[in-house]
Image (cartoon, rainbow, N blue to C red; front, top):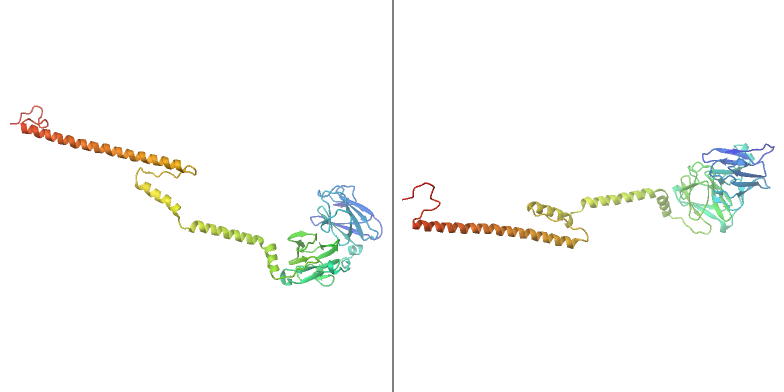
Length: 368
């Protein structure tokens, strides 16, 4: 980050520049008009790649206390207090300009020269009742407290000395944030606080507020209630904000853990059903009857064909067994008939005195 300066006498408004690493630089506004961009020809040169070569144009107003800022058709645009500008806008002390990853603000000479000087005076013009909004605390011991936004500019801080809205919590900085009413909307701007500014859980340097937004300053959460809204605080709002903002991840993890635990319990503790018992019976039957194997379960869509094939195979086995039994029976019957026939023939020969062929031996004398 580099700047070009021209030395002249007197006191001048200063442009304060801070990059995304917190490095700060100041640039005295010595010209009525100046340009901001990445190119070396600019009065204020910002060297990050998210800055266009010719990014913005600044022109000093006649009051010497404010500037007019205009976007030069840059790629990332120019944001004033968190809102992208489409036309030239007034840039005053207390406002924040975002150009790429840089944040620009204005500083008056008396603040730059003295650290003990009070913060710049802010406008105290009051808003009409129809334009007034409010911030309602929805966390900590301040839950339910209402802070009215009834001025065009209001400072929020921890102490009552130089703040319009006092939030007595140790996490709040002395001058924590500023609320500005402009063009019919409220914008909250961080004033360099330690704990920063969060809107709906996201960190901002400046943010335009929408009805129902939850703003977090330090550890205190405030609900923005737009003009005309009839919101009334209830204790249930504290629990809702706690769940949605802080404990959503933990609750989801807890529910998933319970679901997994119930699933595992159902898998290991459920009693065995008929389908679980069928394979055991099939295995016992196959072990007890040798050679009688239970055919595998048919695939889906081929049940009829598999059953018909199994029936044919079983019939063939049964027919073979019957045929084998018939053959065995026939052999036994033939043996019995042969034995009976042979015995009768031998008895007849014995009665006639003829020698039995089985009693004769080669060379043996005949029986007397």
